[in-house]
Image 1: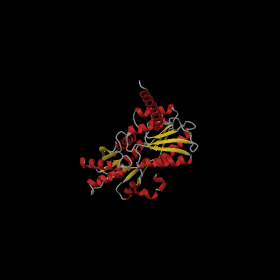
Image 2 (image 1 turned 180 degrees about the horizontal axis):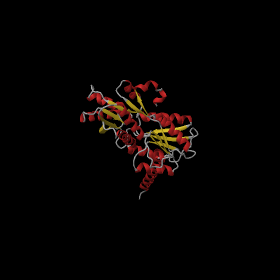
Image 3 (image 1 turned 90 degrees about the horizontal axis):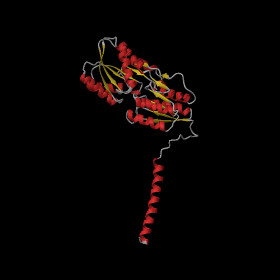
Image 4 (image 1 turned 120 degrees about the horizontal axis):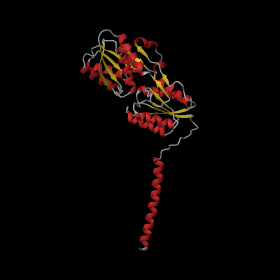
Amino acid sequence: MSHSRLLLYTVSGVVFCISFIGMVIYGYKTFFIQTEKVASADYSYHFALIAEESDNEYWRLIEEGAKETASKHDIYLEYLAPKKANNDKLLKLFDRMISSKVDGIIVQGIQGERFVELVHKAVEREIPIITVDTDVPNSERKAYVGTNNFRAGKLAGKTLIESTTGEQYVGIVTGRFNAINQKQRLQGFKDAIKDTSRIHVVDVEESNITSIGAAQAAYSLLKQYPSINTFLGTSALDGIGIVDGVQQIAANEEFTIIGFDLLPETLKLIKEGEINATIAQYPKKMGKESVNVLIELQEHDILDNKKYIDTEVIKKGDLSSLQDGELQ
């Protein structure tokens, strides 16, 4: 082998080694994810709130309440959610926060073994889990904060019975068929009306927790079942969407409409007589109480593992007595 060729191979080898080492260092710095808990002098704890859908008004109120309480206690609260409601994506976010070793997690409960397994994984790492809005009592979550959804559904059924006379043919618009809280509300409603023979559930359609989806569901129900004269919406944007859907297909007919939650648009439609009543939840209070429970769990276990936030019926006559703070 000639001296020049040997020199060429040697230089090429050195260049390759330098390039390889540089690539390894760059890749490490670029893609390495810190998995050890990072202590911060600025915050006492790092909590995560994992919501059903990122820009949903209802979940933003939960976030607002949680962050309000967190700021009072020097807690860093991280808000995460899929852009659109998606259980698989939510579970991935849940797993990621567990791996990040945060001090506590507030998360919407999801039906299924994967959720139960992730809660167990968190407990093994001494991360307390709070379910909010939807409970999974068969998991190892430390507490549930939110509505008694079965009772809320019964309240909607009782309201319909008291507000109407004659035969009622009910079209139901529900947020998501596979959501535990929606199922419980529907069960509660059916339980409340089961002995009232004049009230009939015609069919149930899904809104995917959007007002557009609720409008499409109401339109579809009326087109298929013209006898419907009453609607129930079981998630926050359903009542608003039902009004839009009804106006598209039967603008001159009168309907009894019962919705859920106290979003400003819902209250406006109650004031205008388009929605007859709504089952009031208080998501901002849910957020506040969830953070308070997580703070308590940093020191010791709690005895009361269900923290129900009150629900009530709001009709047009109740609007004048509502204060701004009560709307949240």
